[in-house]
Amino acid sequence: MSTALVILAAGKGTRMRSDLPKVLHKVAHAPLLIHAMRSGAELEPERTVIVTGHGAEAVEAVARDHDEAAICVVQAEQLGTGHAVQHARDALAGFTGDVIVLYGDTPFIRPETLAKMAEARASHDVVVLGFEAADPGKYGRLVMQGDALHKIVEFKDATKAQRAITLCNSGVVAASAETLFALLDKVDNDNASGEYYLTDIVGLARTDGLSATAVTCDEAETMGVNSRADLAAAEAAFQRARRAELLDSGVTLTAPETVFLAYDTHIGPDTEIEPNVVFGPGVTIENGAQIRAFSHLEGCHVSRGAIVGPYARLRPGAELSEDVRVGNFVEIKNATLEARAKVNHLSYVGDASVGEATNIGAGTITCNYDGVFKHRTTIGARAFIGSNTMLVAPVTVGDEAMTASGTVVTRDVPEGALAMARANQTNREGLARKMFDMLKSKKARKAKEQS
Image 1 (cartoon, rainbow, N blue to C red):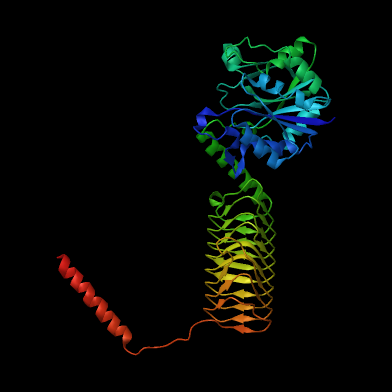
Image 2: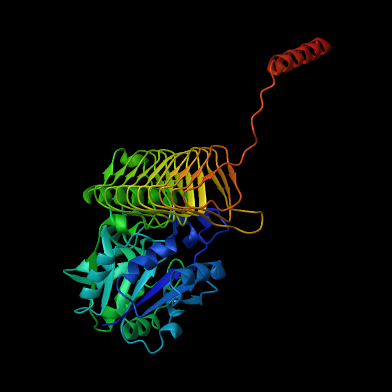
């Protein structure tokens, strides 16, 4: 059976105290909405419909950037979850498979859980995702009769006995498109909130002689984000879970609680991550690399055996081949370093290609920006770039060439050549003492005048 996703993302999120739509606030460098979309994408849905509302244009832009096939529809007035799902009807015209309703502010529903719901749909008309709550609070309650879901009761409308139930509603629902919209047509707003509840379809299904059941998941999967405190809790939950996964997969984290990961960070086994390392989006670390303390990586690829840091920064487009060394206070951006290349100290290498086994001395800078355009530096294999070299791009340094310390390279350096471009040194005997005496005398005069 084919599947479609309907993701509800219309809410403003008043408690966020923000002009940004709630679903665009980020956990692990990705908007909450993207987490929900990534989870649902594991089912290979035929259609994905995002129901937008507050900040609709911004939400649509993020959704379409992640999945250009996503269909966005606008719920101009928010009158409840049932009302929101109804807005997806036209976008699902002609679709005859199953629909799973997700929430853009609930980022941690696992693909495996959605697969369980899809499996349960084979024997039930309506499937709801529930969880055993440690503190049921104001969640809606799932009223079960054996393995059959009798109805869902919102907290506001629940009796004292129903409020004692700990099996709670996540809001995630699966049904065939035909069944879903047929039931939604019967939903009214005769309740304490005056809203059209999606959850009412369970009772309506039972009235129509249809079957309903609940699939359960861990409560942590159902964590919703409604405030900045919730957002911080979601970030912490993501980091704990991802760190645990890395440890289980054979990655060494010497101080796990100090390492922060992005939603798409990939780290291979036998890699060692030292304390206080931060990963931005788009990072892949191959097996057996070492990322030393206080480094920051984003949009980069680090190959087997490479060592990065401490205090290094890899920016988007950094490509490190096998056994590369990038040391302290080095920044690499949009640059490729071939195998065994070394940039060990206090250097910036941007918009560049560095050849195999080349050594970049301390304080070297590729001067890649002229104020308008970026230019590229190419350094060959087994070259030696002396300390404090300025490479004014566009420029090429050939294989096995060398630059003298303090050189400003403005022309190509041929293979095997030595480039030296600096003023000749002159020494003026005794001039330093005269200068110091003059400056000290001037300082004494100023102090006397101010006293």
